[in-house]
Length: 462
Image (cartoon, rainbow, N blue to C red; front, side, top):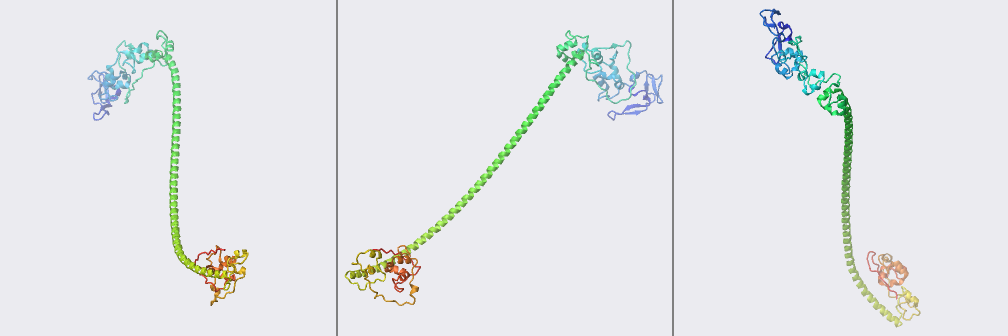
């Protein structure tokens, strides 16, 4: 077609069927039709009576195969005839555009934009009518048979642009004052009922009035949107702050609970350890006390047994001593009898009065010569006690420190009352004290060993 110009004889593009849509430049064969009554001869398009009569505007018809957007020319043009207003489409799809060509000035291929509505045509201005001339049947028919545009176009490969939005009423968007809406002009009608602008026919004829109203609405809407956005932002910030605070509080509570639990557990462990230690210590102390008490009891029992054994021995000795004392008493009785009879021979007073306190208080010596020999002066020299022979009397005549006479030691007891020495048991245990008192010589008594335990002697004064 005309897309390739008049150079078809030297630059004829042939489609390669082995490709998707590639054409290769070739030199036209001699005798190829290149115009109405013209043939290609030696690379030039020249008139030749042998050439057929053809339409030079569509010499070879539509481009075979896919022309635009993967569609053939026929499908592409029938989808929207307004594409044929573009020279590129007319050159590549000349046959299809010729088929929809109309003999109407400035409306040869119908509507120039997509989306036209017939209901708006009676309210539309000139601009709308021109853009939607096919739908609104707007335009002046040709007085003579018109022909398609034969303007030579350059070779293009890009697809044509399809307008899909309805055109505005005018470049200045003005009201059509010749049209009444509900018997009112556009400003009056839109001011009375702004919602009329939602109708496309009213919007088309009252563009300026609707634009002014819409601007106010847009401002209000914008303010409302801004307020809503601010409120949403504030709410989001508040929610985030609250959530953060809640999270912080929860974390703090969890940390405090964990710390308290740990402290309680540690305290319980310490208390358990202390209790265990105290129990163990108490048990050890109890065991030690029990052991000590047991040992003490055993020792006491052993000592008691020993004391009982010594007591038996002491009782035997006491029995012997009592027998001796009985014999001495018999002798004393004999002496007393002698004293009563007035026989004072043989009386001894080597230890003084038997009862010093009683004798000192006596008013007469009748019958007391023997007991109070020193006070009554009835004593006589010793003639019956021989002096025994000893190698060292002083070494054998000692006090027994273990003996107590009426709760007193030997030296104290004899010093307070030399008469204690008349008792043979006292004499034997307190030999040294009795000798120092001048009551007996070192050879008179047999001294007990210091480590021998003897009973305490109690002398009753008459």
